[in-house]
Length: 453
Image 1: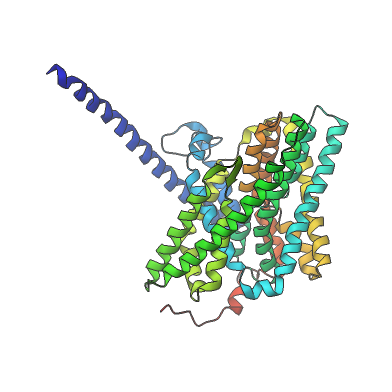
Image 2: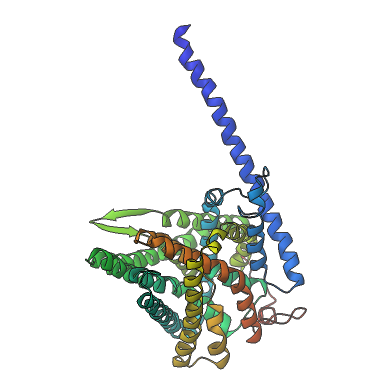
């Protein structure tokens, strides 16, 4: 009998653990359900005041986040801590994967022939100009008062300023069915912006590290970002070809849709992997991998148009959760720090100036229309996930917490007002029809659907 006691005690110890695990799952599911419902209800309110649904989702997230309803600690109502929200990062990463995959649909050969050179030129130049403008402003601030912001942090923030959030932009385009030259160029530029921002950040962060440590690493500054971009594009291209090949073995629309979902999930999972080879850190860019998968698939699959439209409808709830969780993750504690507010305001003002002037200059060089020159820069203001990821990396700097908090503050501002500014710009450019009228996309859309064999 004595010999059996340890076994019995082990069984007894397992029961509470299982109950705790089940309770955690129940709480998570209830919170996600509430988040989805709150986001939908807020979108109805936003429609009354003509605000984009994206803004409503973000505000809904703030309401049920740890600084509003979540702070009341009512069971199953809202998120009680930032850690709880961050624990659901698998949802936000998955949503970003589907968003990037959908953006790849815009890189069709027919569009690349007409706008490819413009998109590449504008995508690179506007990002570089934005970095230069913010760098100058923050370096001047450092020279005036070195105690406010160090030179390495100023250089790093300049590079982070180049990053643009594709998620909010795509959601606004989808909600209002925007279509036209500005919309097409915008979706291409926000995709290219990720690759350019990655290079700019790697170089700037390498220089910042060299200023602090007194030495510079060519591997981390030049080699690692180039490798990340190249292997991300190669992986995405191979994934797109493999997806198209496997699609030919299925004829049911639902099975083809399921296969697309499986491939996006697979690419999201692989993109999170990191390893070291010969002293070189190798990783993947989630946005670039999934975007390239979508680009290749949409150019080689004859039925991609219909499949992508079905995927858009399927991913609707995931996208809503993405923005609600993003709103809940916004840290309002930073608003109590005057130093962060001061640097943040300077950062926002000069980043906006850089995006608008950089877009105008690059569009003028590529002979874009007046509508595009005037409105493109404003549509590139939203900033979120990519910038936050860069800021997290910058935490290794001596005053990296300032960099992170400034970026958090800018994300709070840009995510709340950026979608509305994007909507206004597309509306002013005539690529969103006033409410109650048929959209430009619906007017030009073929009536006959694509049939799958």
